[in-house]
Image 1: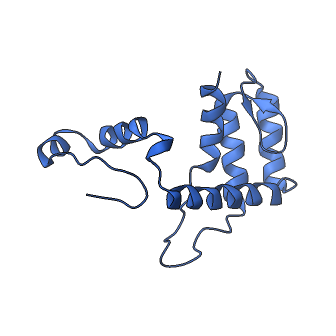
Image 2: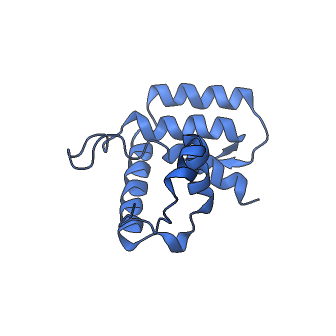
Length: 135
């Protein structure tokens, strides 16, 4: 199995069959380094990040997002993670809010049949994880 996006090291079918899908996915994510990503992968990721931020900024004043923001403010929590639009909160609340911002106006959901649907589903959750990892 080869990819134009990442330099994937093939595993034997015996190794792959012995490992559950979740473990294979986790091993892939943990084992992938920035240097493994091709120029095409980096370019595509930049497009998705900009699209996600555009969607998030576009709905900052939306009523459903204001309700979520009020809820996470009320719940408080240790301010470890950044909220899109400003502020900080606990990781689980940052993931909830940032993901809601990104997904509410999802302009990228189905831009073409070639790209399929929902390619940036986890942009909001990555934001909380990144803040926590950098500490």
